[in-house]
Amino acid sequence: MTREYDIIIIGGGNAGFGASAPLAEAGKRIAFIEELDFGGTCPNRGCTPKKVLVAAATSLDTIAKASAHGISVGDVKLDWKALIERKNDMISFIPGAMGDLAAKRGVVYRGHARFTGRNSVRVGDTELTAEHIIIATGSKTRPLPIPGAELLMTSDDVLSDTHQPESVVFIGGGVIALEFSHVYARAGTQVTILELAPQLLPRLDADAVAMLQAETERLGVEVHTGVGVNEVRRADDGLEVVFEKDGETIVLAAERVINGAGRMANVDTLDLDKAGITHDGIRIEIHPHLQSTSNPAIWVAGDALVHTAQLSPFATHEGQIVARNILTGSTEAPDYFAVPNSVYTVPSFASVGLTETQAQESIGNLRVAVNDMTGWLSGKSYAESLAWSKILIDEDSDQIVGAHLLGHHADDIIHILSFAMKHRVSVSEIKSTIFAYPSFSSDIKNLL
Image 1: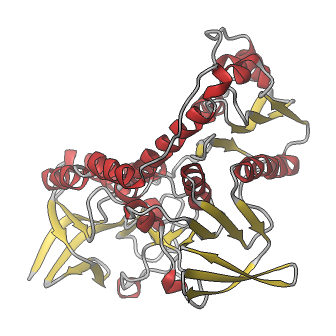
Image 2: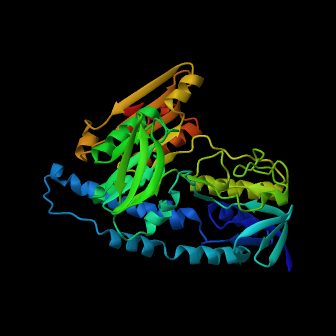
């Protein structure tokens, strides 16, 4: 059986929904294909449920600082099972609600999609054809090519595990490892992070990452960088990780070992070759306006892309652009300038724009403003253990070109700096602005 549509959207996450809204409003006949749960990774297995755990860690951090405010607190213990159940209760409605929304915008097909031609896809026994097909399949856990990799948990598993382990090892020192390690450590789990690269979070500013690593180690997390993992194997009382560091072989026991190597585009099982799509197995070759270079019927958005950060706002933005390009025949490209990013450790780490290394290469008259705010009245008022900033300023244009914040409500303040960068608000104009005082935001003028 073959069914014809104007648009086929493969994937029911942010990118797919970002595209579907304008397409449905324009009266296009849409087929929505989703293999797992509508809403995709972010609300079901990523940012939203993770933030529930981060909120618990933030509460534990606040309680730990209670004595600084003259407050006495008794024994504090996190009920991990209750936390996971709370997370489940908060997000349980999402797949159904998003599925209902998809059904209002088009016809829903459940199952795995595979291309059968340049304009056709098969789901189960049904073949669908359309003038345009949008690949919005999101991402999946990046596999680790080591013996025993099948013994590793993923971030999905962590978010559904009602048992709090006594010890965990993260293989990979990216965002997933840092965020979950701050939750686990505050809950009393012994945490170790093993990272192949010389630095955790290798793409972010080195000085900021060093500050975050020091704070992470202050919590009791053991961090090893520049290591090679040889094997994960079963042991009598759990698992063992065998790794090399500085020429020494080390065996580390843990109850859980977690894949912290990040995520990759989920496109390798779509039979891309049958659609004439140029790719290398993971990276689909696209024009800047998100259209396949080899098949103009194919568009890609969200985490199925590999050249942009895996952030849900990016996915929505890209999906909307794909829809506009389909509807108007234009070649609009996404604007990634001054998009902020946050790592939800406790305290959070937020950044936007260039790292110092990048700025040194491209800005001739660069000023680097570094501040430690733990001794400031705002930081001391809340007993901040880490409050630090690095702002990069092009002195010739009086513009911010990069910002890196730790603590001090970084994940909110970063948006003010991002707004200033995007809309060309100068450093002088920011400094002349009146902010409510005392507030963390009022400190911005002193960071520049």
